[in-house]
Amino acid sequence: MKKITVIGTGYVGLVSGAGISDFGHHVTCADIIDSKIKMLQSGKIPIYEPGLSDLVERNVKAGRLAFTTDVDSAIQSSAVIFIAVGTPQGDNGEANISAVEAVAKSIGKNLNGYKVICTKSTVPIGTGDRVCKLVNESMPVDGEFDYVSNPEFLREGSAVKDFLWPDRVVIGATSEKAFDIMRDVYRPLYVNEKPMLHTNVATAEMIKYAANAFLALKISYINEVANLCEKVGADVHQVAKAMGQDGRISPKFLHPGPGYGGSCFPKDTHAIAALARKKGSPMNTIEAAIVTNQDQKKRMVDKMRNLIGGNFSGKTVGVLGLAFKPNTDDVRESASIEMIQAIMDEGGTVKAYDPIANESMEEFFPELSYCQSWEETCKQTDGVAIMTEWNEFRGLSLEKLKVMMNSPVILDTRNILSINKLIEFGFQFDNVGREKS
Ligand code: UGA
Image (cartoon, rainbow, N blue to C red; front, side):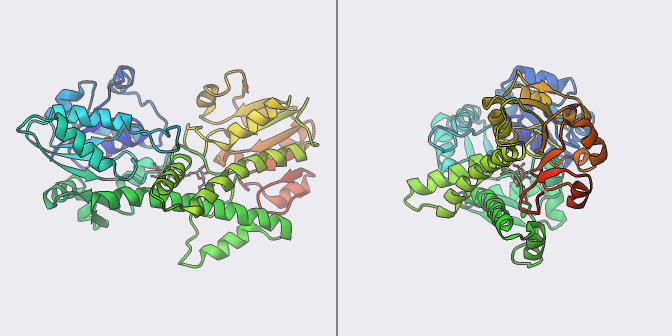
């Protein structure tokens, strides 16, 4: 059992902290935002993430998980310190690591003896050197540390599962001693023979960006295939299925849609592309994936406009799904933002609904009319756009929908509705890469 501090209580920090405490360690999650820590101390979870509430409650009850704003004491009393603060996209496309740098300095100041300092935040390649330098500059003479880069591969909406049952754990460690300590942190995974890769720091940092950028590339690729399918009368689902049956390709992340969103792919693709340009080794594939993704979001707007008669002016559109994907309340970079903005800019009216992300979207569009069910949203609309593949939209009754709308017009950007049923009920419809009306 180790004493561990995780600094930062966002998606990554909170899930990692709770997950590590579940592995049997004593974890303190530290954050400088007082309101967040107070909320956590009172048993509330500031984000929506399936399974996280139970995981936190279980470990708090067992006395293995605590929350504090006293970052200094938490650092002093721990053997391993995880840095899990945010790295938002800066103006030049590169990730902004000022929060990581501030944490590095406070770790340095509080370095009483040997500790492992481990970065979990997604940081530009080379950040490890920067953190080590800042810690060295601010630490007392008896301070001693090893640095580790331990990127996370959590998906929002299944972050708890991804943490407790990962495909692999990447540990970029500067020494064997630090690697052994980290292997102990992840002991239950190691015992279960989960692959644990020991790399150098730059390699671990690169793995994270290379993996995310590749997945984004895969999505942009299938979206372009889908667009071409529309032109030649092919069905993208059958194409993707057959492609995925080739073990070299794999069926995952080959689902066409309105373009990827979230806090990771858009930011990480920009960051790796910016870094590659800076190093004189441009990544043309990723630059293209970024452009394709931006275009895909615009294409969805064009599709909706075409379906509704060429103009949003004076029309009411129901937008079903606001989150960038199901099972999360996160709307950052969601394709629904582009859709809502365009409809409003062009003089249309939007009725919006998401099973859990209404509140998050209010931050972007406070003036919008938010509904509490798909039925309420679709009533008396001239068209409906499905933007997120929530299960409740998969099961919506087209028969009911047709009666409640002004005219039966639907854009299915996630390809979740049955084309046969849409035809049967006389809908005017479009989707991504399949037969349309
Ligand atoms: C992503 C990665 O999948 C995680 O491995 C990584 O740890 C995480 O970023 C991160 O860097 O923190 P996340 O952004 O939570 O996770 O969500 P994904 O499930 O990857 O979906 C991203 C976007 O791609 C969503 O908008 C989703 O709708 C879209 N997508 C995904 C598709 O359009 N098609 C697909 O086949 C898959």
